[in-house]
Length: 210
Image: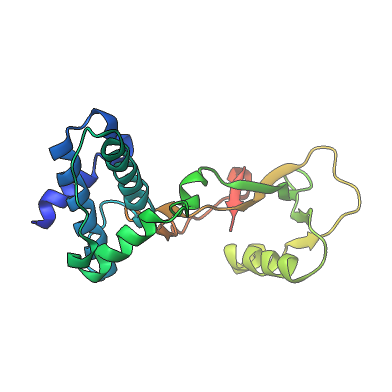
């Protein structure tokens, strides 16, 4: 079966409803999923859907075929002895009571805010940058990046401190955030494309420090 046919089919698997499919359509769709699974296992660059999505949809089709066989509305022989190794592996996994793998990455939909206003100016015209972080490796990294961010004539005047009490009129510079990775079409994660941005101190508001 051509890879293009497989890809066109897989695009619609998220909303796949096996109960409305004919017996013949269920057979064909399962063959397409088995072919896709085999391609993925062989390392081919078929990246339309993730392997967990394929497993979940194949499980839906398998369960529907078995239900129809049991009630006598469909005749179907799986013939696992004639299957290729990867297709047999898929069939064996579907036969077991084990749930298909879940793609947890798809549930990661937002960044995680750790410390709001983790880096801020004491006042709007101050050269004192304050950290809402304890002394340690993380604070040292933040300091190093702050000093590198500014021209030498500004960096030499900077005073990065760890105040006990917050100032009355702070100017937020950075939040401390866990930045999520983007999900690729094949279910893998990739970091967002890095961008280098230059700031003026008054404009440093609610940027993410990662």
